[in-house]
Image (cartoon, rainbow over all chains, first blue to last red; front, side):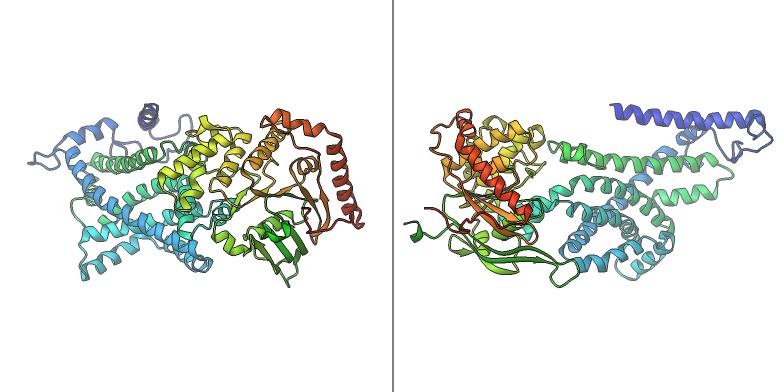
Length: 285
Length: 282
């Protein structure tokens, strides 16, 4: 309840800042009050549409002659993007975990693999996405699956790095204790390392969830996949000069989708962490 | 008569060298010979860095000695560990935050493949032994330090190991709790008849608990002296407060003085009291 209020408060503050900035610019002719310096962004309605106009656009038909209003259109687009992102998130989580367990098994693998995992994230997604889509078309992959793979690419990284940190978090004394019981490596993983990694894992999953949305949208744009938020944003951007409020509506839609997946993971965290109490609430950083 | 029975622990000519051959080579233990009889309570004491924790880990097969051998109930230490002969307790209780108290006690039983009803029955029994029946469903962080340590002891003893290895288990507790825990440990020890090897740097603790105190010298850790502890007739009471009467006996002061003298001579570098390392009194 308090969290919902603080989210609403945040949105309210943003709206006030946006409209306040517009109002000041309108009064001073786009200059800082009582100075000769210009504002960084002009405040006319083309550059910064009114919040109320953005909201009104949501209620209007997407195209002349169609019944569907923009809000419904965006919701469907977000849903389409969501499934690709979700698949990418799931794949990325599994791959990230597997890599972490693999690196845990041997220092040699860790030393060999970790630099490549880091390097993988320096390749710009914009460059990579068309390659994945092109390769996908030469094989059996549908474009939607290629988009999911692009989301996977962003997702696996925070999961792998944080899972490894979490799996390595038990103290030497805890490991000695299990060795003194003649526990197998598998038992040490299941009974000690996995539960000990929980506080590290959920922040990584939240990050991965939002990244999967970014990956899916960028993937949709590069692949030219229809039906998703990426395509919608691309189209709205090309018609920005006649209907600026629409692009903003698309951006808001993307942000809301990101928030939604973040909230979903938080919900899972809360139900998984019930009773585990302090290790999640207190030590998770 | 004792000689006929296989001792609990035989440490024979153990050397422990870390980073052998490199610049930062550390000789942690040198020519250690110790024999611990079944049912004996032996403390290892010495200045910090003397290798007493290392010695405990060598006995527990958590470290492989550079030379020499360790036998536990007639088996090599590695087989003893595989056969789950060891219960261990460390300075930090080391309870798992995500497990309730009862589940922490059941951890070694899960690994040992016990059935669920057996595990539950045993953890109830152990909680009774350490007098924490009402805390089965608490999480470790809801307990005081002394209570956590009692849970750790219950966990170490839950599968009835032949040998209990303890590394300064009461080191982080305040003095009052510490003395109480010592009495509790003695009570549990006399109820179960386990063999205990106990690392400490508290002289009164070693004297109060042990049949024998092994004094180690630092770097390289050698056995400097062995002091047999005789505090007179035991107190026949399960009441911890009454058991504390021992701490006021003349013999208790004599024994602490002896151990202290042995430790002083370690620091001074003179040979220790002419004890007979490794030979247990019958």
